[in-house]
Length: 282
Image (cartoon, rainbow, N blue to C red; front, side):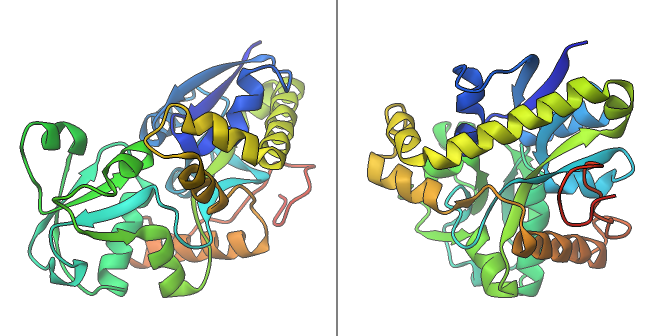
């Protein structure tokens, strides 16, 4: 049996996946890459065994998954790659339409919470390809850009106003925000316990190597990016790859807010991979 691992197709997971893809950390599984929304669908459909996914995917189907302890993708302030860019200040967007990337679920939900609770404005939403629209000469009033697209658009001259959603969440709550988690399908673990556990161990070993060698990865990532090495190091230094106590507090609060805003039915319990160290182990 070949374990199928989902890889978020963004620069921010380079520290986790680079050691796996280059053989620094041995692996014996198939890697399937894609944006978070695509990986969410594959996990829900049982076409992956474990994956990095949107935080909201776990909240929608907690009965299907276990969280892998102490691995996540988030920020304790500015994240730089989840941005609301706008032609006017965010507090003046009432009644306007915000274009939201179809690749995101968690960031879109976070934006809805921030607009209501922090900025206190009501807007309309549409979904589409921001890069394609801008290339075609269209100029939406505001855009929620994520991942590499956000890094490319963050200094666009037509959008002088930028709100970093990681910083905005910190301003609202004082807590880190977790955009993505790594999850295991319960059915996969039950059917192939040893193979799935070995894949989880490899993933964690890769995370440790990547975070210990982050400066080397900054240089590597800058070679094919619009960011120079200094900007790349600033970007990676602002990211969180742990799922420690404060990160769990932020994630739990986000789930509670999702329920309060009617985005999910109820906040889920956090069930971690059995027999693995981690808060809330089931």
